[in-house]
Length: 344
Image 1: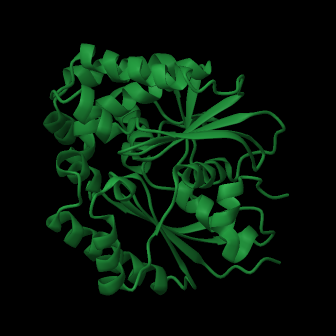
Image 2: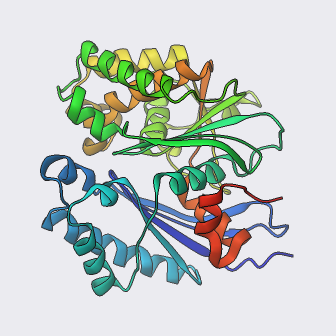
């Protein structure tokens, strides 16, 4: 029987600060999620605007990290794996920010590389899925970057981190509210150009997306297009209430599915609907609604480039990947993410 003492992981990203607390299943093959919480801190907005993390968002981040550390302890987590990604990597005052976090919370944030982030994302996004020897691709769309990973089982075959984050693409190409169709076309064109230059190994049998943009699009599809996730309708059930779609199920997985046609329908909705209306009518947080059009355009272009007919949506990602890596590789969990070899 596996040691079922909980572990916690928090990642400080460009859009969110996100906490997961989980413990392994009794056979050690998967995770059971105890807590999954996020805050739309938007550190990346400061980095895009002034090149550094400003004092107000620094204070907000410290407050949230302190709160999340207390939450993890209350659930019995013996360790908090704390990682920082693109917004901190790119901030001119990263060292100052990290020092303040350490001094005021006791948390040492590990600034991980894009390659490490890609591996952790893949392990998290594909965890709990049926075993297969076929290739899967995982996309982690954050605010500042998108990690693209191709692998078989736990072994990473190929990975890259691209500056295609929803916040970054919104600021660069699609700043209008609502975004214009021509702006989203530019986002899609830039996404395809960057992916084409990398020669991603194809074909893949499934493309899985994680991150706040992906899960928000699933919610929006349920509320605006009346689309339920396939597993909810497998037994002929009625579509679940929209408010349940953003909450993890018992194991934190809850895969949704968006076809190309549904993504195109969402794009049509987003170019016609200002952010304030998305918030009022569909209960999308305003900070997310502002950048959602750009994020949708990135994901739609990536799905087309990878030759998939649909996009699977996973609630899991880099945090669950960090927990799994820690369970399998111990103190060398970041070295394991660098190597990408996975485990049996």
